[in-house]
Image (tube, rainbow, N blue to C red; front, side, top):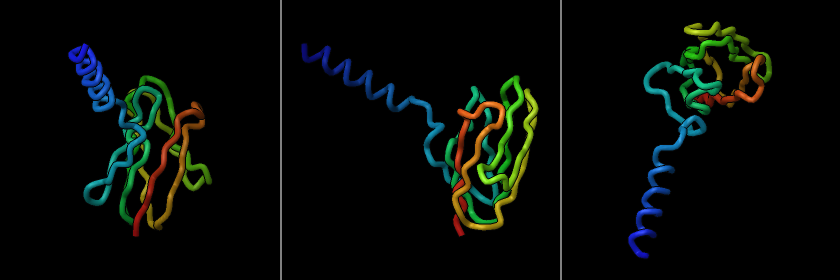
Amino acid sequence: MKRLAIVVGLGALLLVACGDDSTETTRAPGGGSEVRVQGFAFNPGDLTVSVGATVTWANQDGVDHTATADDDTWDGALSGGGGTFEFTFDTAGTFSYHCKIHPSMTGTIIVEG
């Protein structure tokens, strides 16, 4: 019985360790970073960059998406199968965005000064 509990516990730990990281906050190295659009999700879901960083969204899905700021600061079309969009963040703040075509797709860019 103890072995079964250990195996079940280890299995649960592996599931957590291997889970989808799309909602984790990722710090961008250097001056910019990329958000992959794949599986109808922005990955990473939350990205932290420095003021002046350029973020590139790259669509790896076979369908069109957008990367559209909730406050309409930017609106980038991402054609299916390789479309990209870049935006440079010149001010600090938290910027939420979504896909206009698929509203359940959301993300956040956190810009630190």
